Length: 367
Image (cartoon, rainbow, N blue to C red; front, side, top):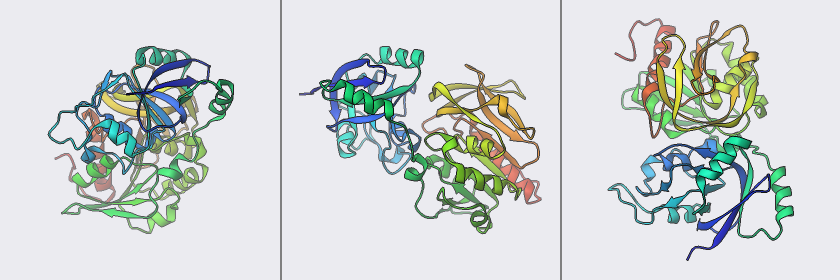
């Protein structure tokens, strides 16, 4: 029988629900994601490091646990909140149920609360810290811990520990992937396009990457406040001086902008889910994109060499930049889009075309 358990927010609000997954307490930043599918990708996305994730879709776990869909080797979320979880999953690929998975990974879960009301509170007041706890007896002591919490060290905790090389059967290009907390599908999409991918730890220097004799560089997604990564930002700045084709995704997009003199700002409740609309300012076309971020590049701070080419339809925030004096572009959304949608997948082809042009060729990756 499920035990009563609570979510206590930094503003003192408490929600009573029931426990599933692991026993214990979970302290983190409470955020919501609007994805209707892809809960496995959400749970294993390193960008959720240090956060308690709320799913707005009411039923989670109906297709079970499918390790082939994981975006990293293990979950990084601090806690998990759903309206209802399915204890009898139905999918031919399933290898278990979500309750057992959370127990195995020591992730505290909370269900049977009004997730719509919680989402509205976070949208109104902004994302805030919280704790999943079995008792409110020592509420003031717990509130002090909640209010003092900050997501820190996320990139260091999620990056690769050493260089990792992955290659397709036929290698056409060699690409470095600066691993800041990468999702596996970024590697998959690069390999599909003939790239040998060398994933390097976040602490790698620009000169060390250049010594790998790569044709291009991808700056990956990752967790936390982008401004916390001063050493990486400085190495990215040094890298851009080499004028080698570069693409930034999510946190990589933000760090590339910071390396050129821009600033970032925290959003009220971020963009998380697979239904985020983005406008291409050159063509006017709208893409539906997958996103997971709580910070954005401040448009008022853009340096002269940066030009906005994608914007969020809902709030007008920066969704992509190109650089006039560099073979570089970046996007805030996820073109690899596991588990979808796939509208912006062509951006990987654009990156490959940039590599081809730099090598003096005239073929096109999209052909």
